[in-house]
Length: 348
Image (cartoon, rainbow, N blue to C red; front, top):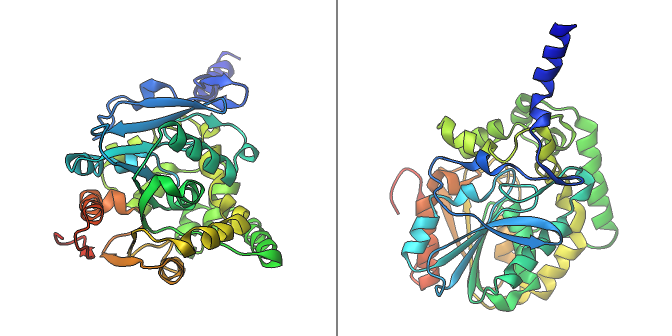
């Protein structure tokens, strides 16, 4: 009996650690973010719709802001090597953690998350900080959410830079069919191991792995998609998730992609097809996520006056592999200097 009790305590110990600040809302303890590799930044918080939202606010307060938005399953740690380059050029850098990620609060139930929740939260943050003349940079889900934030508040943004992201859109029955088919394929291929995901390389396997899996392995995902070798960096990406109950936001994110197809089409037609400000498309050539899509070409075809460059020899998380070089590219674009693609193996 004593041995059984000891075993139960060992198994349940991670669950006891939970910091449930409200029913169904978890908050990663601040101690889990201490002494992270290469992340010396001070936290800032806003209460938005009853949830604590974390953001970084670096650089001179009177500098024109750069709004950096992370994707899946990352957080503002992703921008740690970019921020010093951007602030050194005189920019104020705002890098929030979306709900369910980083130091922001985490909803326990997958059903409590929605694409619109992320948009509304980030729009409110932009309004509360009263960002003006801002540059937006988004990659992965940072683009899917951030481009909708820009389309909701276009007068606040002076330019857009995107990499390895998209804004999938459709109307009418086609939107319904795409969402239904997308979710059916993910259901059909479940369950999926991480090894099967890597071998298949199809997006429905990624959705099935994250949404239907028991415990999203954030460390493995980041090592694979971010080409990360340093175990301390992997540990930092895992820091927001003490156990599986904190991961619902990361698990559901890919599943939400087709849920705003009609609204995205409205953003295309109402804002981006009429865009008359600088817009830079800087995708990589070795991204296993977007390389099979026409997302980059959609921006070139639908946004007037787009500037397009290619970053060679880099995978999905361009910020992780060539962060300082990407930041220098953004600085050049903001300053109106000529921009060109570059290779990970050489300096720009």
